[in-house]
Length: 360
Image (tube, rainbow, N blue to C red; front, side):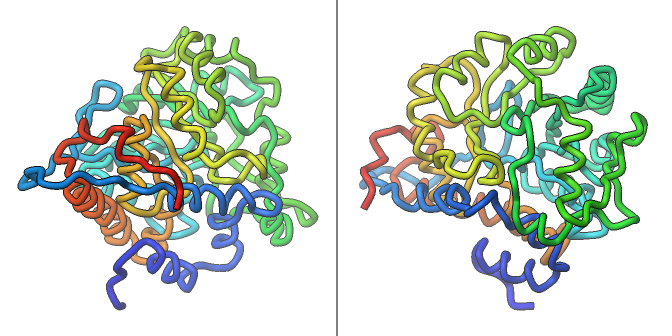
């Protein structure tokens, strides 16, 4: 295999390696995929007004997020069903993330129990949470994440119902018979139904996840967990401020990778206003269309403390298992360090809004 030079080349290799339904599930967005495309384009449109004659003999990418020292501001986003890409699934992802100094966020909808992923992790492990109609099942899942050693929770709030992903509907997407939603096995919610005229995941969401979620539920979560809670799926400054007011430690500026409401704004467009509204209160992470180290520089310059990457990790996993994930994350880190040097910014603190210019 020719060694990929960038994330797009990993995507090509992943497409060749995967069965069509799994590939479509990973790649596709909602409806016309307008937001999916806009996420990527928005980062491309921003220009970098670099500084010159700055000593960049040493560039430091280490950051502190939620009180944890991380080797990189690049964090593995929560994505479901890693064993569609590789038999080792989330275990391979966790080992790779730890080896390159990146934190990992494990999805509620993982094919591997949180306890096993925690045991395989050598770096920080966070847990992404969906709230089920059965609150006792939700609380039990939080307790398991705490006991396993997860150091933060990421509450997804932009999926009261599942966005219509037409490729999944066309494929009648469901998990193969040998895979399940392992974290929900103990609660009896581990199986995804087959839905010949729809997506099995859509049927799962409709039957089990709670569309009545409100700010009171965020307060409920914060009231009983000892872990910091990040609210994922925020695109409005007023919602970001409300999340902090209600007890969250921070927000993830996210439109679910373009997979929920098509026509939602690109995350690069809304990040500056959210950072301005929070004005230093709480942690800000961002995801959506980040494919290069220069995108990471832009995100941090616009006020984020870190970025989440989802699909690129899956491309690496499908293309070459643990080694592929390690290479993808290493690629981001290498590109980030080079971009910082070329911007005349040897430290993360040097990445400020004056680096960002108007679109081309």
